[in-house]
Length: 223
Image 1 (cartoon, helix red, strand yellow):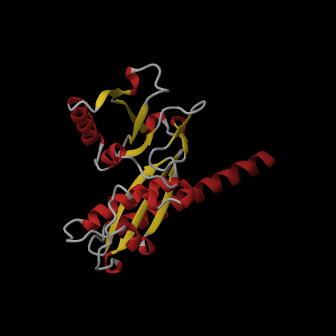
Image 2 (cartoon, one colour):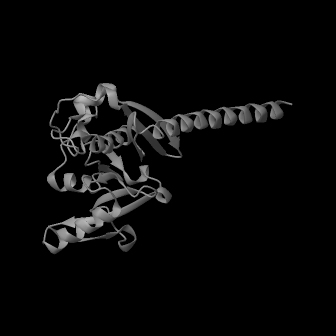
Image 3 (cartoon, helix red, strand yellow):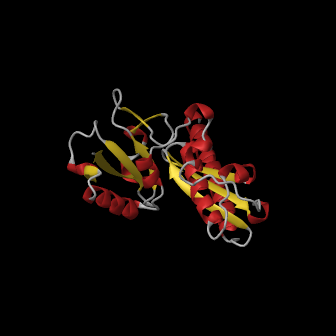
């Protein structure tokens, strides 16, 4: 009887979770269908803050498209709302804002540097020019072309997929979401054990935080 009760409780909890997830998906799809009312974007990452930052970053690109003066993240952050869902070890952040709430005046913060401005103050970091250049690329293919151009110009010694090297502890890594092919993180060489520095946030991170079946990785060696 006790075992049966446990099974019933577990089944009930799973049902609640699925129902909640379905409600969130329904809300997301409802917002996506109203492009005349909302700006929106979404991003998946192992870290919830990074997922939200990148969703905001790409949404800001859409908002500033065609504007004479770019808006800053500070000017729209009070109006941004988010919906967060989890899938395994990854967090999916859906950021959206009403077009009617968007200020008319610009603010002047670039989409590359705004990444760190959404983070809490103890995790702030200004990515270097090379990392900022990677962040400005939309997907895996754009980044791959950028790396090849950098190699031809003599700024990179070498780059390639993770499977090509046995020891990558001393290499910087670019991580992509397997589905969207967008950059989810850039990691420094190992600092201690398996710990690396997240070059987007300045916080500690590890390749172990990113599921292998959901992540593409490129390593590179700078000149």
